[in-house]
Image (tube, rainbow, N blue to C red; front, side, top):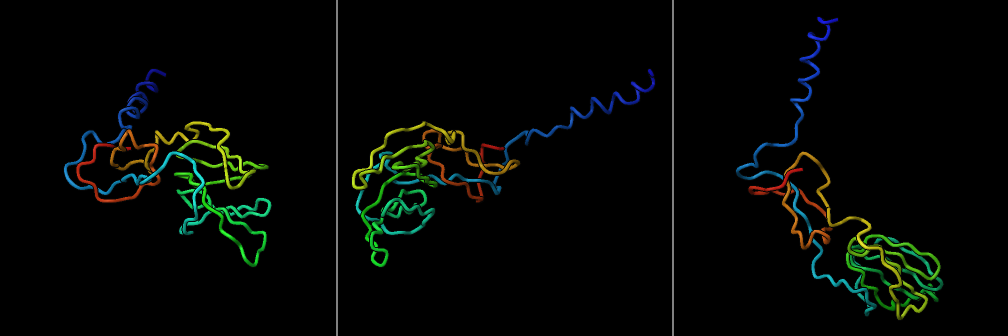
Length: 177
């Protein structure tokens, strides 16, 4: 039994030595790594404004006589579809950072800069925020999508505005995941 323990002890203890926890030093020079893409020109206030062009549509919901069309990262287009052969664009609900929407009764539920907001749209010309759950998506801790790569450290004051990560050449990055 003593010989068995002596034979396998080095194997058991050596497995602890070779765990890779990332590079010991940061690279000198250029590497391919992740860079955050921030939302720009954002308003943190949810407002109803005149129409905007439909550029990057997402989900579409039918609510009573209206169509609600998500404009990715921007908000929701409101279209009066009372006459389907002649729909009328009424306006746009600015919801910065919005990617997904859902409906429950007279309420539009949407993500807004990492928060989850509920908006009463029973008066479509005057939508009102009625509830908010802060930082439900923990966007303030947003990290790049893959491990084992260098990345540009996010600006701590803007980390909740990270919309995406892109692979680009980086010079002397200071973060590694």
